[in-house]
Image 1 (cartoon, rainbow, N blue to C red):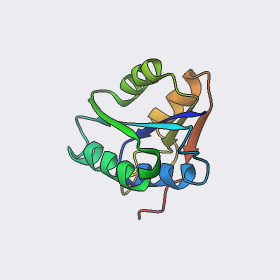
Image 2: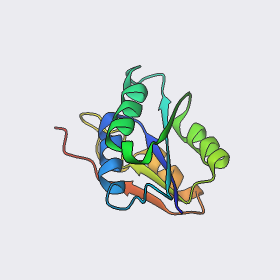
Image 3: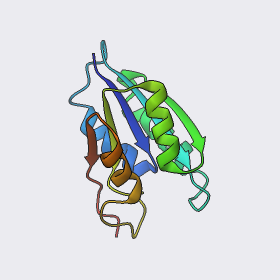
Image 4: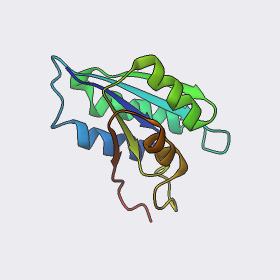
Length: 126
């Protein structure tokens, strides 16, 4: 049994995480929780839309979803402490048009976690 936590900042990040997870999931044994964080400077619907994508693309695993408000790094670290997943999935960046490279949240999770962190590739949005 593997427990996954998907850090969902946008529909694009969630879709990329679903593409990664679909062939790896054992729906009878694995669990998935999707945590979206609403940031003050991000569109307000991003986290909710990301949860909808997770529910539809990962329906076989019946993912739990939740949305939090605040700093993405701090909220995700708190969720990881709470859920204690085996593996964390995060997009390289926010997954919005114009975002490039590895963002600060992905970098912070890679630096601070003591478990596998998968940085999922995102489609080219330009």
